[in-house]
Length: 155
View 1 (tube, helix red, strand yellow):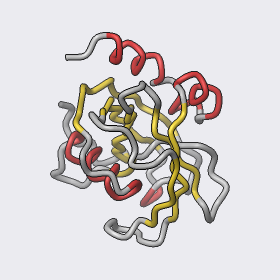
View 2 (tube, rainbow, N blue to C red):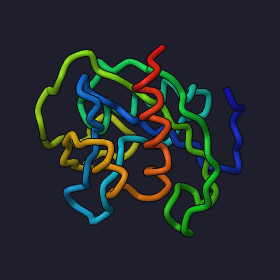
View 3 (cartoon, rainbow, N blue to C red):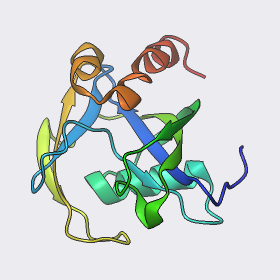
View 4 (tube, helix red, strand yellow):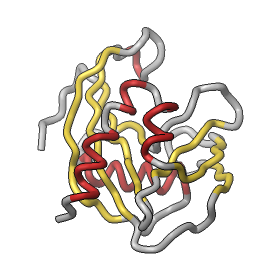
């Protein structure tokens, strides 16, 4: 596991698949920020694996996922002002997660209440990996092929 880089914003992102191989995605209900996968900042002293499970629960209400594997890390630059404390560089820690049961719904809304910033509202749904690859931001879509490989070769 990589060490903490205090000058870079650390993010854990969740690629949660259901038993049929569909991916959990969301759109913010209050801002136009495109289609995304759950994820967010890693707290100082928190492992990336713990952070991805926490972020998934905060942003979706799902707390029964398991980590299949870490897909990798990527360094990105963000537009100024789009990350906390003005940190323009970020490290993404991408994880494939799974659920052994479907659902809970095909689509649902969730309001984040247990995070550092409350009041975010999400419209969540499941979509195929092909669909997700077309609609996710490039920095998120780049992990779809590793998810496909992970699904073909479970641990």
